[in-house]
Each structure stands twice: as C-alpha cells, then as structure tokens.
Amino acid sequence: MKKSALQKARATYQPKLPIVLTGAVKMVEGRPTESAADHQAIHDLFPNTYGMPEIRFEKNNAPVQGRPLNVGVILSGGQAPGGHNVISGLFDGIKRIHRDSRLFGFIMGPGGFVDHNYIELTAPIIDEYRNTGGFDIIGSGRTKLEKKEQFDRGLEILKELGITALVIIGGDDSNTNAAVLAEYYKSINAGVQVIGCPKTIDGDLKNDMIEASFGFDTATKVYSEVIGNIQRDCNSAKKYWHFIKLMGRSASHIALECALQTQPNICIISEEVEAKNQTLNDVVDYIAGVVAARAEEGNNFGTVLVPEGLIEFIPAMKKLIAELNDLLAATADFTQKTPAEQRAFVLSHLSAENAAIFESLPEGVARQLTLDRDPHGNVQVSLIETEKLLSEMVGKRLAQMKEEGKYVGKFAALHHFFGYEGRCADPSNFDADYCYALGFNAACLINSGVTGYLSSVRNLVKPSVQWIAGGVPITMLMNMERRNGELKPVIQKALVRLDGAPFLKYAAQRDQWAHNTCYIYPGPIQYFGPAEVCDQPTLTLRYEHTGK
Image 1: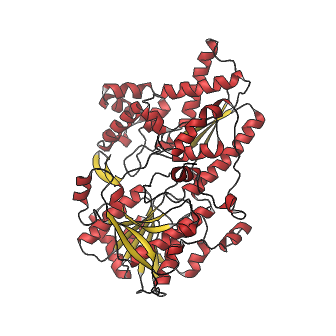
Image 2: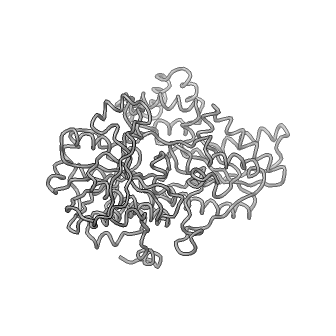
Image 3: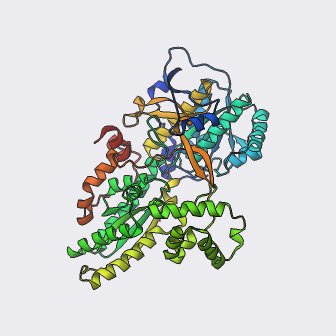
C-alpha cells in the first residue's frame, strides 16, 4: 500500500503511556457506584453488574506476567479518530501480558460478531494501522446487540476461538450494548468478560471518571481549521454570511469547542435554547439582530455555527419530534404511503398543538422529520438542513426589518456542513496517546478479571505520563430513556452545562465576537514541533479541569 510522506512519518510515532501502565499493575477498588439516574430500574435490569466499584491501577513491583489471552474486538457505530490506536494499544497490552496472546477483530462491527465474520489481527496488520485515522482495519457497523439470540450466536464463535474477553469500542449506545452483553454473559456464567472503550466525536460520553471520549480532540481541531479558513475568506471578501452546521446530535460540545477555538460572530448552543424555552423565531431574531448590528458598521459578513441537533432542543419542536417518534414506531406501513398520504396521516394523528407546529414548518423540513429513523428509532437530524432553514428565515426577517427601516445592509448566505470530514482524520498527538492508553488499559482490565467496565484514563490536562488509569462500571453512566416508544436503559448523554466553565467562557465573550471581527485562525493539526503546538488538549477539557 502506497503511503504519503506524513503517513510514513506518523508510522514511527510511539504513543506515550501513563507511567502507571509501563510495568506491572495492581488493581485498587474504590467506592461502590450507582447509576446516573433511575437507580432501582437500572439495578433490576443489571443485578449482576450493578454497584460495582470504581477501579484505579497502581504500579506493582512484581514482574509482568500472566496467562495467554484470546481477545475479541469490535468497532461499533460511527468512526472517530484514534480507533486504530485503541486496537494497537490493546494488542500491545495483551502481548505484554503473554507473548502468545491473540487478538481477533470482528468485521464491520457487531454484525460481524453475530455472523461469525472475523480476522486474526497479527503484528504485521496492526503495524500498518498505527497512528492512522479511520476504522478500516476491520470496519464498523451499527447493528444493535440487544437480543438473546444475538448474544448466544456470538457466544458460539467466542467459544470456538477460545475468546474469553470482548472489547467493544463505541459511543453511548454501543457501550449500552456492552453493558447488556456483560450482564447476560455473567448471568449464565459464560466465562466471557466484556470491556468498553469510550468513543464519540460528539463529546457527550463522559463523567468524572471518563473525562473525554476519544476522537473529540481531533475532530474539533479539524473543524476549527476549516472554520478558520472560511473566516479568513469571509474577512477578505466581506460579503457573505456563512452558516456552518457541525456534528453533535444530542449535545453542542463540538459547536462550543469550535467557537472557543475560532471566535465566530454567532454560535448557537442547543442546551441554552432549551433552557430559555426559545422558539425557532427567537433564534432567527437573535441572528438577524446581530446581522443588522454588524451591517450598521458596514460589515455585511460573518459566521454562524449551528449544532446538528438544534431542532430537537427547541422545546416545541422537541415535543413534536417525541410524538412523531412514537407515532411512526407504531405505524408499520408508513413508508409505503406517498408523501402526500404521509403528511395527511401525520396531521390527522398528532395532537392539535403538534399538528399546528408541523403544518407551519416549511414543507421540506416537515418531510425530513418523517423520514426513516435511525437504528434507535430517532429522527436523523443530520438530514435536516438546519443551516439552510435558519439562513432562509433570517433572510425573510431582514427583509421585514428593511421595510421597517431597521436594517440597511446586504445579506447573502453560504452554507456548510462539517461532519464526515473530521471523523476519520489522522489522530492528533493527544488522541494518538489517549487512544493507545485506553486500549492498553483495557488489556489491564481484562487481566484483572473484571467485566462490564469502561476503560478509563483521566487527569488528561496533565502530560500523558501523569494520566491516571483504571475502569468505571458502565452501569454508573446509565439511566432510562424512551426509545422506539419504550423505556430502555441507555448511557445518559452528557450535555453542555450552562454553569460549566467552557460555556461561561464563551458567554462572557460572545457579545464582543458578535459585533466585532475577532476571528482566530487555528490552522491544521501539527504532529511535529513544540508541545504547546502539538500536544494541547481541547479548550473544553482545559477549562473544565483548570478553569483557565
């Protein structure tokens, strides 16, 4: 396989491990845990894996030794930079425990596990993928592991290959599946451990023990580079308003981090919109007000960052979508109807309040709200062109303001959606180190005999040698949520905290950024050079843990 000059140079990079993982470790148990919410319901669903203690590893002066391990690994859900380094760290970790340990990768995600589609990952294969982006070493998939037949079918191949531990690398839904699988295998004494690794560029899988999900660092730096490039162009041409939608279905962490990195004129934070009970028109009026104020200074240009999931956070829209989710989950033949029949059906079955909102939406947006659901039964918000909807509505509002003598400028909008561009980028030094440590740490968890745990590496604002390694029970992150019309146990998403340091930093400066041109141009990710350029974590992480 031909490689670029950068790929060749990155292949020689050796990720830095926390010093505690560089030799033998001993497991230290902390306090017993409980779920994020709905304690009794989660306890009842996970009687064998609920309430387990937090785990921290400490150095052990004994020599590194152990029995050979056969381990399976699954990449689940959307891609995130650093996944290959998790697998590399896992491989190196189990080989350090015993040189005869073996690693098997299930092809194309959980589906490969159920269908017995796998490959043994040997040293030559692993070495081809170290420090690279993407999930192409074994591929990923979105098959949900939630049925007993799937668990039993997967157990067949685990027994055949002698696999006694399975590592699932995924986000909140994938690790919810890991928790369910761990509970089932423990309940039947299957002799299989299940360990999760926290992946999602959205940044919404975290708590005190999981300070960041991997991929968030790299993805936000990729997006911030491109936003900075657009802002440089914007400030050069001085004639366009750029509406930029960013990934982040259920939380605005990506938009907030990119705003802190680039200082745009406007960044909408979905959690704030919901907290203030704002309507779509409120958001439009705010943007139009900023556009008009800048026009008075002769600045008919600017940038607006829009989180992907904004529509679902507008309270009235949230109620509409929730009712639509339940309605469509219970309507088997909905997709067989014509668009006109679908619209009529929806309007006739919604509550009066939600029917009125649905009818008032532009036809294209209303149609997008009834398209096929994702595997979890939710609206696929990435298909809703929120950035175009907002710019269109802002344009109409400015036309009204011009008639009223309240706006004197020119408004021309351009649209962007940054999502897939950041998911498979070569990992930053931070993500390369963090992911390698997560995988290596997962091997230590396996060797310690635990199941139902997430690999946890924290103290991330310090140099990597000072990071703290251990594990957190997956049930600790869980609550009950409505999915496909039913209450299901899922990992609780960590939303942007409006009293948190990252948001407060943004809120303190946004008025200045709105009316002035304060753009920052971060430039591309740097892999070689001084630590302050190459190894810095996200501003979100820094502000959360240092406040400055």
